Each structure stands twice: as structure tokens, then as C-alpha cells.
Length: 226
Image 1 (cartoon, rainbow, N blue to C red):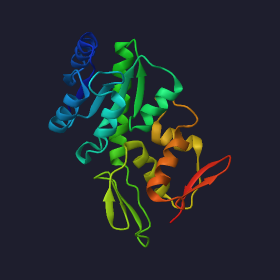
Image 2: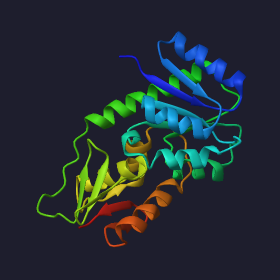
Image 3: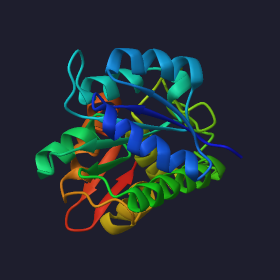
């Protein structure tokens, strides 16, 4: 199966380097130099993965990512930021906007291909998981195939990582999930993120679902309650 990767970066030499190395490994590659064009190309081609620069004219990568995550047909598309900014707050901002990974420049081609392959393996594994909720409780449900959350009968979409975190917690209501289990299941071992990442995503979920559903177990982790 040929995977399609969309590169959104305003630096032509970076796009050329990435495209060459990905096509050499059998990927189909589309490219553009700004976020607005990238969003339109993403809608048309529905790529498996988007490599997205953070600092760009017209529309920066954070806004581009946030807008992509609001498009239902792109809910399963992986997004990986490419940027020269390596500060933790920048990483948290990128992940909080809906990205799946964060790679700093300068780019090492072999490492880039390896990280992309790992992300796509995670996507395939995630798509095959079946998260089962308690059918007797209908106030919150998950449609994993369509990446939709249904609350009180009304469907809406979440950024990918928020969705996967909620789906994990809802897979076994009342079970306490340790933080390290949440991190390895939702983010995987390939991604290095700060300690606050889980807390940021939980806060976002509580804002959308209400404070009563996700319970903090201090010093341990989180659990879901109906």
C-alpha cells in the first residue's frame, strides 16, 4: 500500500529534500508552501500524514493544524510538525493544537523516514482497535470508525489525541489508567513530550464534556465515569 504524505513548508529546499527521501522509500508526496493551500490540498487528497512547518507566512502551522482538525474527513490523518523551535512550550502548543508528533530541524532524512513510518504504524494499529463503551449509558458514545464523539445525541469531532485519550479511558469505565500507560498507548514510545501533555489534553476534554466524566486520581492517573 502506497502512503500519501503532504508537505506544508515555505522553504523550497526543505520540501525538495523531504520529497526526494520519501519518494525513494515508496511514498507518494504532495507539497505546498503555505497553510491555506495545504488545507485545500488536504481536503482533495486526504493524505495519510501531513508534515507541517510551524513558522510560515500567510498562516502559521498551529492555526493550520487547528483548522485541519476541524475537518471530519481528515480526522484520521496524522500530523507531524517540522520546526526549528524546540522549546517545551512550543511542543505543547503544537500537540495541543492536534498534532501527533513534533520533529525539530535540521532534518535527518533517515530519522524522518523512520518517524513517519512509526506514525503510520501507530495509525494502522489505532484504526484496528475496538473501544467498547457501556451500551446502557448513552450520554457519551464514541464512533471510532468515523472519529466522532456523540454527547447527548449530538455528534462532534475532537483533535486526534483528545479523541484517542477519551477512547482509551472509555474503553474501561471506572478503571484507573496510570499516566505511563496513557502516555505509551496514546502517544507511543516514539514521541517525547513534556509531563504536562496529558494534563493539557484532559483539561481540553473536560471543557468539552464536562468536569464530571474524567476523574483525577492524584499521583496515579485518570479514569472515566458516566
